[in-house]
Amino acid sequence: MDRSQKEKLVETLHAALSGTVCLVITHQSGLTVAEVTGLRRQMRDAGASFKVTKNRLARLALKGTKFERLSPLFTGPTAIAYSRDPVAAAKVTVEFANRNDKLRIVGGALDEQQLDVEGVKSLATMPSLDELRGKLIGMLQTPATRIAAVLQAPAGQLARVLAAYGRKGEAA
Image 1: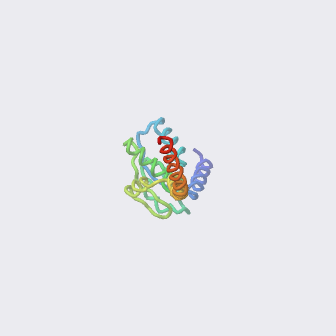
Image 2 (image 1 turned 90 degrees about the vertical axis):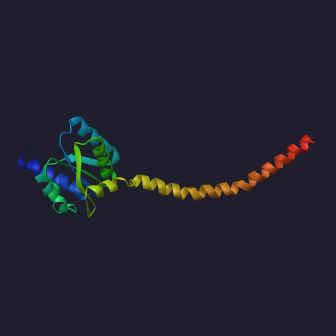
């Protein structure tokens, strides 16, 4: 990789990290191409990205971002997962790391908040933005459904009473 390619890679990574909310740093050693491809696919499906990085270039890309304090974590065979969703990258990374011991979580950050391994794991247990939106919509729709049921109940009860009197009259 020549100098201009490295500069372009640093610029691209810097731009991606500037618009990111969640960053997870991992050590990956021994992952096969198929495993990394599968992980990238899972990340993409969740709205996140996974990138194997060169430590020196990643440290350069971190300069001027809210994740600059994470530079010391970039040692060894490093890869990063990042997303605009606060939990997407952490959730997919933790799920994959639980199934595959070749991927080890080192740390991460949620916006300005630096996270250790346990912090990343607890972040992964939180519902995603889409799940929270679904729950909120469900909560907003529930009262309307209940009101409609209550309003329909008296009319239904009256119809059942009249039907019962009608059957009683036919039987007599």
